Amino acid sequence: MPSYYHQAVKLPPYASRRDEAIAWLYSRINYETSTPIPYSEQGLKLERMRELAARLGNPQDRLRIVHVAGTKGKGSTGAMIAAALRASGQRVGVYSSPHFDRLEERFAIDGQPCCAEALVRLVSGVREAAEAMDASAAGPTFFDLTTAMALQHFADHAVDWAVIEVGLGGRLDSTNIVTPEVAVITSISFDHTRQLGNTLALIAAEKAGIIKPTIPIVSGVVQAEPAAVIRQIAGERSAPLLQRNRDFHLERRGDAWSYRGLTGTGDIELIEPVRPLLPGFAQAENAATALATLGLLAEHDSRITPAARSAGVATARLPGRLERFPGEPLVVIDGAHNDASVAALVDALDALCAGIPAERRVLMIAIAADKDVGAVLAPLVQRFSQIVATRFVDNPRALAPGALENKVREIAGDGVACQTAADPAAAYKLATRLAGRAGAVVGTGSLLFAAEARRLVVAERGAPP
Image 1 (tube, rainbow, N blue to C red):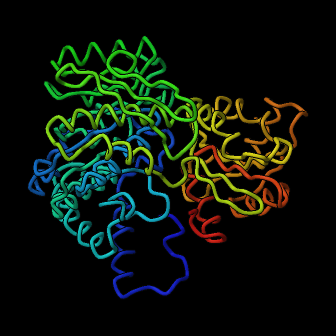
Image 2: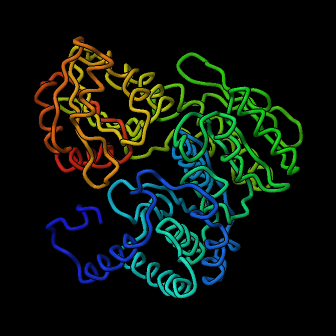
């Protein structure tokens, strides 16, 4: 179980029950901590998830759901959709993973994680069902259980909408028992290739597994090969498809963006200016996909106005995604962990570190051993004067700092100074010293590392404004 659940703080009376509940959850098969992550119909059984949901009374059937998959951008896109729905006066649940600080973050309603008492109650409910299933066969996994908890929590609180984020892939993901109002695929790029396939077409086929017969699908995928796969699967399932660069478009307009898209009636809709809270082209792409999705929902819900949609895009934020902590030095935390998400970070870097030259920027990085380490490092190493190679400590999948340092030197040669640190705390201390008061520290390489690094920064500076 992650060590941060045992911090020495004054605990309320229910804390021991919370710790017991979390310990039981983490005792289950947990693919988030597995290396390599298994991926097969034998290991990831939707029938098992369906049985678990049935034992709980099928809470998913009481929800209006937006189901979001994608290699990158699903968290930001889901956050924008949820923020817009809240801006339209509706109650919205969001199920996301992994969490950044506490497990409760995975089960948020109107932007607020569930409370500890609710977590204990939810675990108690799924535990009874899981242990009954254990008696006859391999029972539910950690992610099966957290998915069921989210669906139960949102149904219990009668949310107007539930935004459900896929964990891995789509076709075999625990969340794929839902029948949504609309499905979303944000992007396709290389990640989890051992599980999902080593071509964009294969990865797209796994993501497109969330497409249901006759249910609308919004795709932000622009590369020809994976877009064709999604188009084919949507056609086979008679699922109406909104495709970026065909049915909706994003255009630069000065310091903002313009969104233009088809409505379900064939009319052309224009929304401008579009100003995502976070910088970079990738966030604008996420905004376009979110706006297209919201446009579909608005056809049956007049409360989802263009103003509410614009407000959602302009206010949505996620911890550890291009997150800027003002101070001396400036600190930026981002969970980039593959070539596409690193490219998005690089694109936003100058805006995030405005006024701070490259020679005063220090990279603090940790990467999972099962990732394409070179693809993550290569775009980054020449953009920093110094690098601190470290590891995350709450998950065994981390690459050792020494091995990461060797990879940095293999890519950068003698052009970049690189040091190692045993853990995030040591890395943060070293990186801030190297940057100096006028510099910047950028922590990235993994969502797991971003979470651990962010806790250190928040403990020192508080959450960003």
